[in-house]
Image (cartoon, rainbow, N blue to C red):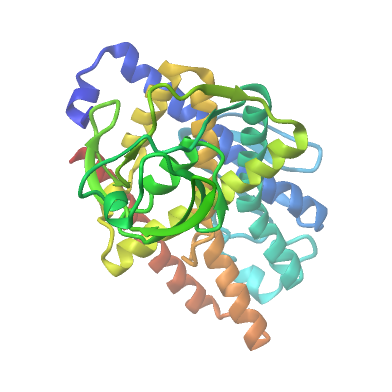
Length: 371
């Protein structure tokens, strides 16, 4: 479904997408900012404002510690403002740099400030792990034997020497338990050589294949590019759902979160070196559309989407761009090396550059959504 079709769909579909998007984003943002907030409290830093959304407050309260909890009218993010901050991006005020008071964020030791900053993204990763673990425990995971039923002629698998009857046991050292594992890894590895191990009549054989980039239509009619290997499973293969215990669920949830992180970084690296097209980057319109589609399928699909988005938001915030958490950590690295913070002018210039980069990225992603 393209943008025009999305807007001209039923009012219910559009409203469902908006509500699902705002709901999922608000939960993710709350967890992210609560990571900052709680760690700041533990480190003795005063928090002046905890906001979900930006702009004028449409509701809120003051807690016993002097923190103003509020909801902004524009529900597209959030922030915590520490004592001594000049703005919601945690840029230090001139007074804070000159003489910080006890309880000010910029008066805290370097390691405490770094811990407070990194706590937000870490909270996002923790949320994803918890969601995935609960999904594996309650809903289970589909298991289909990763056995090749047929090989497409002239495909990547055909060229690599795959044969019907091969049982795929490993991909790049990663144990394969289900045909779904194969599809997931291959789909995000277009143009990347993968090392396979297959069981062929009891003999373990090593094969190398590079999935070919192929444009397909997803279930909503959107054009997406994925990697295709060129193997299929048999229609008679049994699919079973296996519910995992607590330990196995947590282990697989950590693995799932790490998989999303590494594949996201791999895609971005591909964009930088020219192996991947940047038109797969999505903005708020596309994410809202996907959220609406997930909500229309089931609450489990929407919760699973929340886990994926939480990983993405945590990862993006760690990029070394001033204004993001990673930018603050970059400043603290310079401070550790120099033995003193960067000057007010240098920090202000960095925040302006970071702001411009973030806005440019948002415009580009939104343009992708529209086109």
